Amino acid sequence: MKKVELIQVEHDIKVGDLCGSFEPNIKEDCIFMYEGEPVGFFITKISGKLEKFIEIANNEFRSDRVPKSIMARASGVEQYSTIIGSVPPKPHLRRPYPSISSVHNTKSARVFIKSMLAACREAENVLKEILPEQYEKQVKLIEEYVPEKYRLGKCFTSSINNYNISAPFHRDTANIKGCVNVIITKKKNATGGDLHVPDYNATMNSSDNSMLVYPAWRNVHGVTPIVPTSEGGYRNSLVFYPLASFKGKK
Image 1 (cartoon, rainbow, N blue to C red):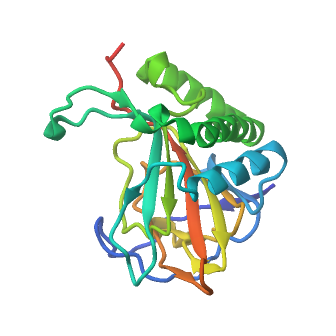
Image 2: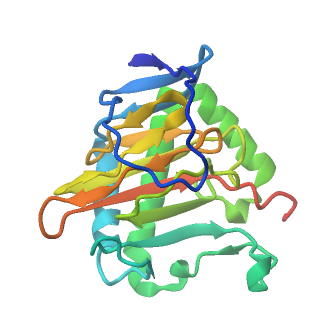
């Protein structure tokens, strides 16, 4: 697989800024290198069991069988999300302890949850195949930071589906440092929804069935505007991530 060296560039983008449109410049399978070390990778099209489970999960998520958090419409586009796996403590909501997403208690969401868990396992296999050292490192970090009951697979704690959500620039500061996120995109009749990392002027082409593996805690990043090109067009990102909020909760 081709290696792409990430080179730091100057920019004035800050956390909270809206992400504008950037033309993708990462369009082929590659491994991201930083100072000579692999830090992530990009695959233009997943295949096999992973593709199958992601297709099922995406279809279930878009149905009325899965509970969702509805967001305000942006330019008339539906926006919603669903979290599964572990949820960190939220003292401001009078819940100073971690929990498991309530979606797991919804009977109609069982197929969605099973397909997401299966997709998680397959995504971990891809990570292990392409970046075996990162995989082993992440397994050890999860074992150190996360009690078994709060783990999602071997490498993560949680997962979120983000439907038509163009995130402003942010950094995933709650993640376990040294770990990576997995972002798999489902897209139909829509443009945009590409992840932009201004530190390296890198924009990943989030095409349908693409897979991005990246340490989201490391850099500020945002998602470019999502524009449906016909009725029903959408972009859904299925994300697996490792939170650090469970250490000491054994």
